[in-house]
Amino acid sequence: MSTLSEESRQIVASLTHRVGPNADIAKTAHAIISILQDIEAALTPVIGQQGVAALYRRSLHLCGSTHPRLTGPCDRVQAGQVLTALKSVLVEQSEADALFFGEMLLTIFYELLTTLIGPSLTARLLRGVWEPSLSDTPSQENSP
Amino acid sequence: MSTKVTINRLATGVPGLDEVLGGGLPEFSFNLIAGPPGCGKTTLAHQMMFALATPERPALFFTVLGEPPLKMLRYQQQFDFFDSEAINQSIRYVNLADDTLAGDLDEVLRRIVSEVEAHSPALVFVDSFRSVVLASQTQNNPNNNLPQFVQQLGMLMTTWQATTFLIGEYFTETDTNPIFTVADGLIWLRQSVQRNSMVRKMEIMKMRGQPTLPGLHTFRIASSGIKVFAPAPFNPVEAPLEFPIKRLAMGVPQLDEMLGGGLPCGYSLLVAGPSGSGKSILAASFLAEGARNGETGVIAVFEQRPNHSQNATLANLIQCGKVGLVDSRAPDLSIDEIVHLLLGEIARLKATRVVIDSLSGFELALAPTFREDFRESLSRMVTALTSAGVSVLLTSELEDRYTDLRFSPYGTAFLTDAIIVQRYIEVQSRLLRIMAVVKVRASAHSDELRLYRIDDNGLQIGEMLPDQEGLLGGRPTRQLAVKGSG
Image 1 (spheres, rainbow over the protein chains, first blue to last red):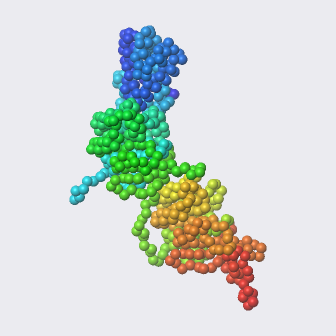
Image 2: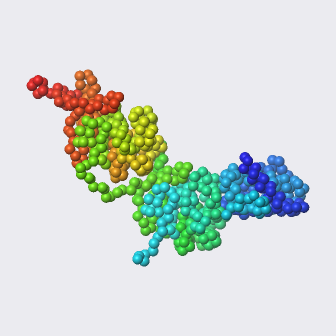
Image 3: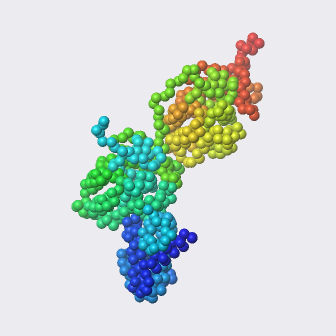
């Protein structure tokens, strides 16, 4: 499990980096959605749009047990509209709530993908998503 | 200098497949991997892809409707050849599900071409091609011309210098399908099920421009991936017999005498006899004698509990590595797999003596689908082993039939170069054993029926019973002439 917590640390770091300093709720929501979009872009060629949409739905469902208020609206929209719906819900939250929810959603998504295709392939496919934030930290293994 | 085009042959990375293909996969060929569900098509494609793809020669894997890619990745990962690091580096997956769902073949072709142009792959896989075809059939689209699509795809991929594989579910090879004509290579995978046994078989139905090995070749899917058991290469130029013939000692001096000085080197010897007559003991002494002379050996045991049938001498030899043990308890063996295992051990130990104990067990170990061709299988095994230069001792269980002289229940006696037969006889309320050398090809040998017994030191060959006759009938009688003169 230590590797997974390492990954979730990476997710949090990446999100914090994207949100940047002095963020308002719009910026926070945008950061969360942009990461999700990057994930979608990375995974769609491999598992297809439908595959990514199904993973989002499952992740949101898993988050729903603690945050039904946030995930509820996303359940009712079409597969392609999930992110738009999520964003409109996110901007109505407080920054702290949105950030907490974003971290949880991303971590759950990552764990879900890990249980399906294993840690190494998950890390390989999503490497590009975290990279912008990681390039700032000095002790980084840089893949050629 | 030849002005003909040279076709590079790619090593597929699948053990045995290059041999079956007749020397590897022709570069820029357009191939179809076909077969019913579950026969290993996607696995074969992945194994070749991971072996062949490099950052300089990348692979594109188009996933179409068929198996959801998430699942494919989940399961393919279980194989040793799967390397996550290669993904997005030398191997790129492209999902075409949405384009295929629309059912427009022109659009599918356009997507494939644009991805191929963008990434210049050396290898292209389309899994599964069958679903492209089915999707096109469900639409009443007049622009959907399948033969044209296949033709164009084939031409584009070849001119784009990509070796291409279409993976498709087909059930009958007699389908009139345009792709069968266009493809340069047709690799057909099958599962043959008979009663409780399943054997995977592969056939190269077509591979333009090279001498493929015809027929069905068995393969297995293990955690390392697919392993094809290509028939052992046949050496048409046999080494000429050297004179004087070099002979091997059997570990029973009197038997060597009976054989005319030992078993000629490179011969196959059948030891036939009823249960308990000491065939395995003779086989063990054959190997032990070899070990004593610095030779190594291999024994193939086809028993349910091989440890229980081993004698101490043999167990020691195996323990100290002088004899290799082939003890495949894998179900549904094929002859090529057994030969493959044997030749592997022979090469590893540089063995000169081989024992197959016994043919009856060997027959049971074979998958039922091969039993009908048992004689043929046996002949191929003996040929493969003797052409590898080893001397082979085969044991054969023989039901005692006192009405005729039989050497093996399979009519296989003609296959071997030499035969020793063992029988029980009843003399004065005792069950005694007799042994005779029936045949040693191109060599003089004894014609005596000799008594023998088995003790802690193995086989001890004794005298003839000149005053008895009808030994082979099992119940000899005292010769009248002997009685009269004595």
